[in-house]
Image (cartoon, rainbow, N blue to C red; front, side):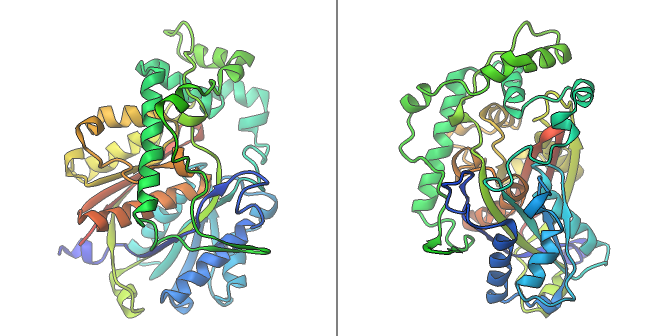
Length: 408
């Protein structure tokens, strides 16, 4: 093992909640973001993490207001009984927040500023809805005009139009994500990472509740277009001003090819190899690289792929050298683009990308999604005996982040 590998940032453990429907009828609606973090922190303690060894808690969240405001990372550490000595901070890079929380933790560890850091993400979309922060990117006409801010679904249809992906191709991808997620749950692949969430007056919630295992091509084909009306209300015009080579936006995404909004949380334990071993923890994978990128704010959803490509280039590794890609399914068109450009032939049996399904099937909990991607990549690498994996997320305003993991 090289000195840089020995002295780098390692992941020692990973836990997440199940993902609940982002609605008042969802299984996690009764839990606040802080509640979810508290339960995960207590679970980590039960799994052998000593809060006395934790230097910091870093949590990503996309809508930091109301009950997701006032630093839930610090509040949860206090309420989980971790002691007053454990700091906490929040991170916001929209949907990439959870990945960046882990990347920041790794950077602090590599710099020698921290020994063990708990990092991840949380979002309770059913309680703090999308766009509820009222930021200028969503509400200020001048900002919207200057930036070209459009709904993510309209941006997805823009990308489908630019890339020439047809509705049938998108639908096929959506069916695949649902089927893979259903098979993964049936095979128990998430058993070691998902912590059942205790709920008042109900049994603990122990599984993702958004999966639709009965999804077929016929079911997908029958779904109406999801974003055509938004486009007709002026958002198509914004997109076409940015891409005048197009005569119109071809709306092709439906509910089945769009990520379902979800509630959820995830935490990882990151630290130096030495700090982990002193604490009795076993190193599972090294964080070999992390990259944040930005792209066209109207096209918006391509930066996650850009981050993957930049991270692999930094390590002088090609896509062929990656055993598992966990790529947040920010609409089916971007997943097809990723597979095409990185030459992942799913039709030919190449199951390296999202082998256990993704956010189209299991839900997108905004700030938590990136941490779930990293954790899912870790456990899948272990399951298949792989060496190298990549996790990535695209976010609003053309942001994207990626992390590369390498097992010893």
